[in-house]
Length: 380
Image (cartoon, rainbow, N blue to C red; front, side, top):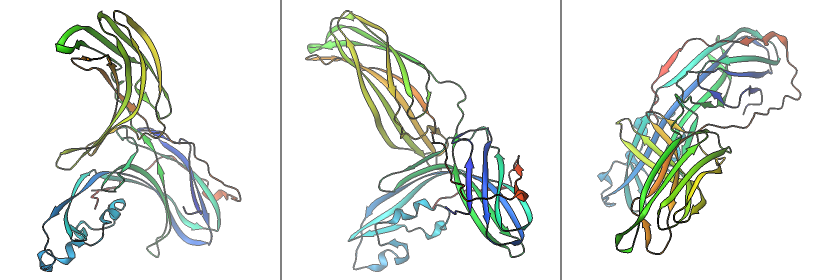
């Protein structure tokens, strides 16, 4: 980060539709006869998958595949983090790994990138330290901040927001200084999701003997949570119509990540069990009513997001388990409730020791201009 430009945001995460409130600190080393200071707010969203398929290749016939289309290293995914810096036509279509040739296929899910621009100041600037406050409007329908990259680098998705300060020299048609900082958004939830589920199933034994019915119900205090928060569960396990015990109830949080490409083809990237906790069971003929349990949401979870390119979902599942010898449930007794995980960030800390601010640019920017730039965002 450029030490001559610092950003401070009053809220670690902003709710979509609210204003991003903060301050920007600028240190000017030399006098600038005429400067134009501009603040921009940019949004960007995309998903991409690189797929490699082995194809026949004859090393004795180098004309079989043109040299310019071949990537001779295994690091073809290196360019994934710079989606707009390289023209799409420069992408390699094949990868040669030893004697094996792969065809490289890219699947994109793209979304338009929007840029809001506000001119803050135009004129002479003397050397010194300056600061100004800003309030950046956000759209009500913005999604939560999100970032994902697989270990091999072949699958990646991002929904990001960025504030940039730029000092231009209009007489020279050049940029003297530019610095950016990520900001974080939490998407709004249109309505509170379902918080209650109930299901039942028959217990059977060897030779399919019916040993009765077990019923499980689940209720949450809320399903909009932040990482590290305690999720409070109330469940009832009714085994009064059964001749066999339920040994335990498994509570687990499931994460499902899906990418949607521009052809509206959905690809499940991963389905993983975030955590699992065992709760008490019940004997035959008995009932556990309105039992309370507390589960801590892991602190490293990515936010829930549902867009035309990325879908990251969480589900709380509770399942009644019968572990007795030759005993099982004919139909799994599983209650599942969707959970919304919010973006969470620690409060920002910046060091302003040694900064002495001049009053000339202590101005407040209360509103951005209307949308000035709209471009299609095509990752490479």
